[in-house]
Image 1: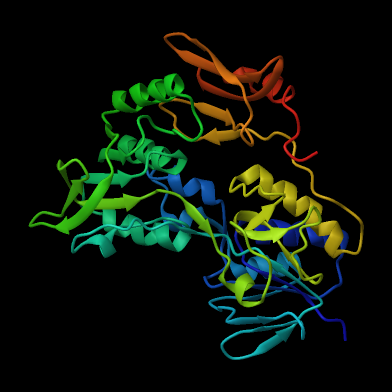
Image 2: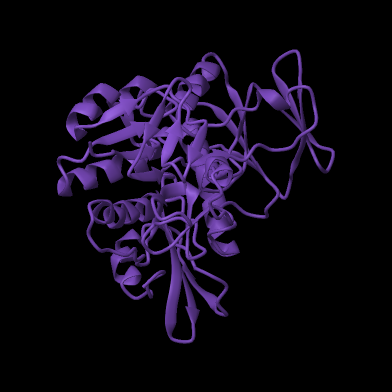
Length: 381
């Protein structure tokens, strides 16, 4: 009997890999294992659905049963893998053990939780999947004031969406401008002004130190001694790749699960992709790299030869108040930003000599995206 291919995880990486694999191989048994209900949905919509009044259940496009039928697969929902045995090529669930021919870790990443003092530190919300979002929406019912910790990509997206839905948003970040890891200061200030035009308050250069309960909600104490009040506190300070299972199995770990250009871990029968994986030192928790990896790994699982390549891939920031596309600068090149700003748009180009290595487009200059990305060298040729 043919042993199955097992994919652990039914997020964007897991489901899209399964779809790509089934285009090439209709017959090999395929199992997917997930800790949640296994619904198929678009994770980027979690930070852009409140203003349009889309309910969490509306974001689920297909159930696990529908996905199992579509993929010709067995999907094990509400199941946690407790152990991987690479030598025996088995995974252990709570009530059974499954053999595998090849195993794929598509387990994603966990939100980084802030280490804060105060009696309400455990009441801070995070949103990393559809179930988190359901719980968060329940907490928002009847609330008005929201403090968001983290003015990075996800924090700014939630701030824009929730502000447009009528909530009073305060965005807190120790950096001096929003999206500080992606944008140069002048571009970050441009974004800041557009968010402030929505009524969002930005407490930049301020780190949260403690969150405590009050008679009306929560009090957030900032490192400088200032305080602010909120009915809900959301943390959006970043993601940490999930590596526990891989580590317990003795696989090589760095920031993420270390894989080669074939998405193969340090064990030849085990692969990884998505937010949990690190390829040639790159851990890229964005949609386009995940799709690129799925298209590369599928033929490998089907017995063909393939290798992952990353072209330069722009990131769309879903902030309608300030439409933004960023092509991040990879590595630590010696270059500088050249910035052109008007009242309605800003173009920032990162160049080393005559070579364009990254860009940021804010406002009404989005039409230049394709022309610019074509000039940037591949991230992983």
